[in-house]
Each structure stands twice: as structure tokens, then as C-alpha cells.
Length: 249
Image 1 (cartoon, rainbow, N blue to C red):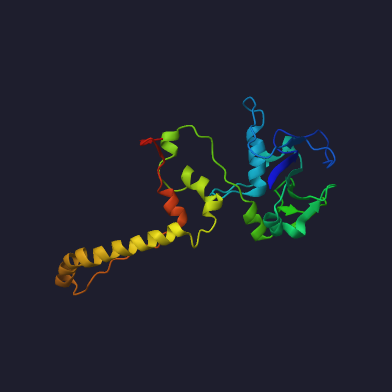
Image 2 (cartoon, rainbow, N blue to C red):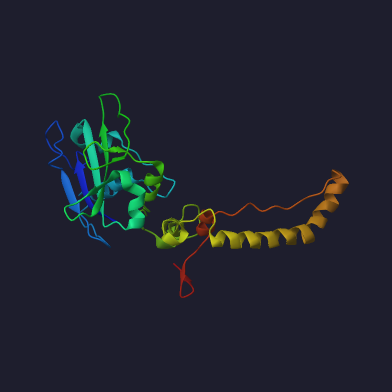
């Protein structure tokens, strides 16, 4: 499946002078192609708004939190709407969204996902991501929302600094969203690291423990034991550093 259409109503730069939203006349419509899409524009032309609209609806694999704020409403409007449409489903992909799918004139499935947010003079009203063939839809399940999550990479301004091993590194964010690393709980890399950790633990308990215990017994009459925290796939990926022809990027 792929994101085929984006529609915005009263979101940031894209809005209308009308007090009410007309769902038949979006403030912005973007049609995407399958594969790589490139958005080009001058500064402050709305490129970031397009990306953020997608992030707000789909959420991301990273730990960052993004939510609707007062500044997201166009020209002090009271309501905004973001609508995404997905097409070209495989049977394996479609099974996650059965109750929310629609069918086009060629009997191909599509998924419409949207976030409709209102506000009063005092606060932004609670809203939820919904999906369905009509304009109201129903709430997506946690499983379906998880399947829709995307990988978002902030603008890369210093490759050498931003591709180093660290928490939430660029490489880990790219890999964690790839099909190869979907099974975080029982991935073969995690199992291999666990076996290696056991050997490391044996080494310390056999070779180093006696040295530490000698001092512990003199002061506390106790013995030590070395343990290694169980590895997670995310932490393993965060430790990677990409090199090309032996040179760090």
C-alpha cells in the first residue's frame, strides 16, 4: 500500500476565509505517486506543514511526541481537518484494516484516515484518528494505528554528527521501520547478542569475580555476581555506526 492523497482544511497556511469547512472543497490537495515523491518549494511555502500533517495522523516510530496546537489552526479558525488516503493494498496489508476499507469503481480497496479537530476560545477539544468510507468514520484500533506508523527523519544538516551511535540515532530509526526488523521481541540478532552476553558474563564471573570477592569478603563477607542486561533490538541498532569504504560518514 502507499499514501496516494493528502487533503487539508484550515491547517496552518492552507485554509479558506469561510467560517465553516466544506468537505467538498479542501484547502490543499496533494496526489502522491507510488515510490519516491519529492516536495520542492521556497522557504515558508508549507513543505513542513505537509510533512507534519502526515505525522500528526499516522504518528512515528520515534519516541517524539507531536500534537495539535493553537498555531496549527489557519487564521484563528475553529476547526481543521487532515485526511489521508491509502491505495494499492496487498491481501496481507488489507487484513489489518478490513472494517475501515472502501472499494473504488474498479473494486480495489482503499483506506481513508483522518483527524478532525475543533477548538473553543479556551481550549482544543480532544480528538482521535478515525477511518472509514464516510466523513465521520470510526476509531482505529491500536493494532491498526501501529501498522500505519511511519519513520520520520528530521532534516540532515550534519551527517557526521547525526549518524553516530546514540539513542534514537538516524540509522536505528531507519532500520526499525524496515520489514527486516519488524519482529523486535524475537529477532535473530537479539538472540545472537544474548548468546554473546552469556559468554561475556561467564568470563567476568570466572576471571574477575574472584578478585572482587577477595575484597568483599574482607569487608562484608559477601560474594559478587556479574549480570548483563538483556539486549533489545532498538538498543542494538542504536549502537551501529555506518562506514563507507572504511570511512565514517
